[in-house]
Image (cartoon, one colour):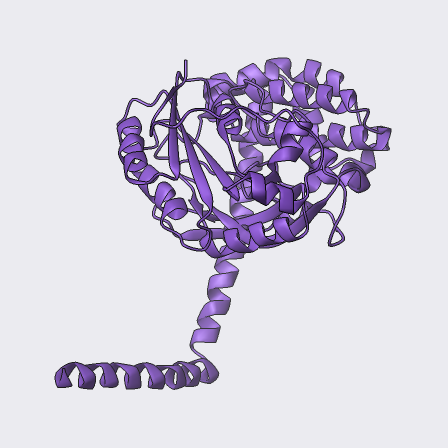
Amino acid sequence: MIVQSNRRRLPAVPQKTGRTCPAETEKRNLVRLSVIMPVYNAGAFLQPALDSVLKQSAVRELELICIDDGSADGSSELLDRVALADARMTVLHTPHGGPGVARNAGLAAAKGAYIAFLDADDLMHAAALKAALCKAEAEDLDLLLCGNREIDERGRVVLLQGTALDPRTAPETPPLFSGKSLGGTLFGFGAVTWARLYRADFLRANGLEYPPLSRTEDICFIYPAIRLAERAAVLDVPLVDYRRCPANPSLEMTKSKDPLGFWKGCERLTEIFRTLGAEDEVLFALKRSLFVALHYNLMAVDTVAGFRAIHERLPGIVAEIGLPEMPRAEYTREETFVLKLAALPCDEALTEVIRSERKEIFSKTRTLTKTAEELRVVETSKAYRLGRLLLGVPSRIRWELTKLLGNKS
């Protein structure tokens, strides 16, 4: 049962499908954007996430729909307090069903012309939000793919990412494109549903929603959305600060809790694309992306029991995917590594993973050491010291003027 705060009733989902012109959308929707936030034991990160949406002034015609997914840490009470103080915010209280189920409840309640998702420990960028929404409205886009920054638990930026989680895999796109025109390259975009804007009528017309999975539900939403979009574009600015916080397991689901949960999402995604009648080229690209998912989860699982659970199923999963139809010399690093692990006994496979992780750590350490040495060379150069001196002059002048004006007042 869904219990709603702020005395607002759930609006009925419009039955009309198809494209609606911007003028008609503006008349029907007083809300330009609905931001949907699933919340489950978000702790101290929840208030900053709410503030990043409600206290920004770049986009005022929005609503924030928070779905309390059975929180037991005080998040529920905080949501209700904030909703009472700001009429733009609605809270839905639901039994714990996972982020996908929570987002579906938010989609059913949304009144905005465009939809954005934000996790309860992440932050929205106001300026980027305005730029993204204006672009989506002006070009009547079904889907706008934006970038993000990665921050640590203190809010420090540790990585700037483009429209793909791995910028090297992002496909080259024209200013305006359709999902079908991308072919198999659409899987080069990051498998996240935040840092994107979706036209609400587009989602409803295509029946797009999240499956009730514990993990990897995102891939079953974003990739079909890209595939089905008739008008899509890229805006390579960071729309969201994505927080990596291992200290809060409620927000970063532990891989060991459901080590094979990712594969349920992969199977569902394969079923969806076959139902959509995807071409052989697209299904082949999907097959290769599944090997990447296997590699990632084998490397990321954080318990021996979790690794054993995945490895036990690995030969069957590889057989289910099917080997890439090409010479072995053309296999990717991930494909080669997964096939190697599948052929080894579990203990030997685990040893191979540990050895591979050590090599990667050593390589990153060498890169960081080289960068630090280059930085020291720069900082000891005459040009750098002169630049610091010249930049310091205006700062000193401002400080003296501020002190002088302060004394006069």
